[in-house]
Length: 266
Image (cartoon, rainbow, N blue to C red; front, side, top):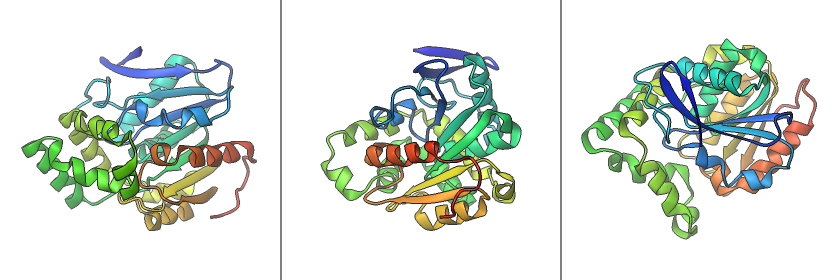
């Protein structure tokens, strides 16, 4: 268990692998913590340096209060500096993808490539986020849990995977205030006008059955990026690192082994 203090707050992180290995930095989704990447890790080759962390208000990281996505990108940049990672491939899941976009705007020097998992330049509408936040404030995480899990996972996974109750518990045990704080930041984030300037090589991966950031949205996002390729994962919802980790790992490995110049489109 590693803790980094930034702006008076504790950020929980896990730094694994050889210090001189190529760095993969993982940023998790709303309602999860760094454990969401654990099913993926066994499928990745040895030799990578892997940095995972809990976004503010999630897992063991302190609340950050009401803020913008840029503040979360500032946390990530500070954490990378703390552990001595000067350049990395960022793997951002859902809001982690928004954080990666904000990090590119502020600190492009830190980014070699980006893997965007089930995210977009703009996620949801004001009404969607306001209604969800209002429901949580009135009834806690239980008020939105089951609907969120339907968007996250396919029916087959929800009904048949023995680990599903653990992911449900992770969401239920997310700090309600932390969820709402980050939900507001997602609501207010819009990187539509910035997509054309994101020059890093990007891989955009989307679950074919994603109910949160569906393939139509993510294909549109990928097409806005100047150096991007798109891949869709069958029998998968919003969390490919959980539902189809072996396939996601193969896509990431292939992407990392490719050139850093212009990628073939979609």
